[in-house]
Image (tube, rainbow, N blue to C red; front, top):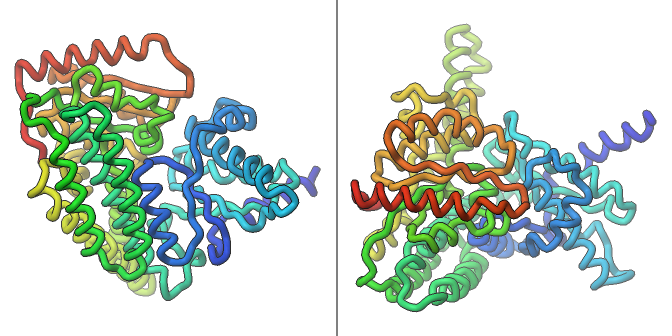
Length: 452
């Protein structure tokens, strides 16, 4: 028994981490469809054979090898990797080599179960003798998702820039989809257009990502936005504007949330979802904030050796955050004159919102920081309702609801909790219809403000 425990712990330390991706197939689970495919394109630009795995087809496998107590995204992503490897073994037969694959599963600090996904999935893979040598490549929010050891040292910084930009452009493509589809001239045209655009943008990142030729990428994006505008029917009047917050995987993975945005649109909504770049900015902002706290404490204690270390962190992470904001602003500056898209929140403004209303603290962490402040921004921005999308039993989203529901009730703004666990709940669509009836009433009474 002791030997078995020792082998398990050794596997967690030796087969989960940051491994060089050269000559490996890097398997990216699909969370947000746009961002995942553009990120894969960025990896390929740097010589990494990255591909986005088919998603949700292996859900039965995911449920078979989990207990049901895990967060639902853990079940989905576990099923994705098991399904992919099963298909690869069938395709390659005796040529299948598990050492050729690295499965991408990052992690985050704090009490959220997301930090344990890759550990649990390591145990699951180790339960199959022929999959023990499949490694799990993990980035962590502890160092703001640094890439040490995965990409060649001289390329790591350039890749990080391209990867972040791929997230931003993925967010813009999503926002373009949500802006056009409720007002499209021809039903289904937007979905076809976005699929073509996604493929073109992934190719663009593959061609120009390593060159850091982001202007060429933005030129392509600008052409896509110009084409997308032609799909909008200007005769369709504005619709109630609904904001979405919640757990990052569930609110962006359309299979897991049963395509909740499309359902809301079917009942008359225009929807805006919180962005992926917002989470990346938040993790960098948190490292700056933590470094500043350490700097102040050690200055008070005159521990100058640690002062130098924390000052270096403040400058390093602060530089990353500044770069991220510049690149994000540059992208939106190109598209906003062409089409009316919502921008991203600044993380510092979200923290100020929490402090101003004494609602929550960044000291406590988790996605509740972004969701609670995001709902307040939606309220002040004239949205006609908010939906909180999350895995069943998700702690940060439950905290969000407990704090924000009374406020939303007081302000008479419709609010809907939408937890998902893979089951089809018979009352789900009735709840959405009721919510949208209330949102329409709010829209008729108050109208809506312009996106900002």
